[in-house]
Image (tube, rainbow, N blue to C red; front, side, top):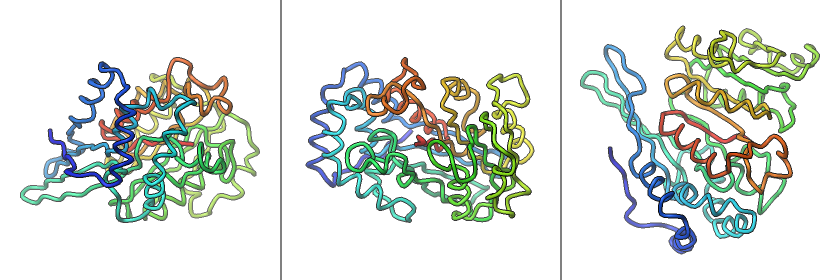
Length: 331
């Protein structure tokens, strides 16, 4: 295991102020989190006769601060006070989305090493930090219109050009509409821009829709891959029609396919799927985790899991990332 420490910090005054606030975190919680963060996991993600790939996940300094202090900063009385002191970080975060250069004190990263015989290839894949509400960091305290924005999400962009991709969506709504805004079109555009080639586009939606409305805006070039199940998805792990089982079967059929999975059905049962898949099943995961969080209370209401908090949610996403999944919160 290795951990790369920064020898100096940019924006050091803001970091220093946040660390002082963070000193209030209980010793027990802090020790647990330090163990998780400072000893990132190293895992084999592929292994065939000729090649193997290992990865390590590194939380950025910004992410570490939020993981360590989220239990305190999640409270409405302190949340915006803290976020406003981090505006410089947030501006850099938003500006660098979709680019080629990332500030590694703000963006977390996966580092990969692929070995094929005597040949070794290394690359780094950046991802947005688990911080500032797990949504667009501007939405709560600077610009309410950004609350449903996706402009803060850094999807995978490495090694996707020409690669086959299977997209799964539980809570799919319609092509350009949905309670939280369109997701189907956003994912199609985002992965298309990265050069990926959709071979499967599989969706579940419990709310009944007219098939004409479902298909009328669909790009014709996606028709060969598009499957829309206008029925509730099952969480029963023994049922072959469970979305996770469908996903795993497609992975078995094509081990090299890139799998993206979005889960947002506004129902507490959605958390039952979280324990049913791992890093060998999913490359990139998007999930709106409805939890007890004062900043979202008026929006989520009864949908929220009252046994889990914002800080708990951040730790779940962290664990997923450490298992090899590019896990994102979804607005």
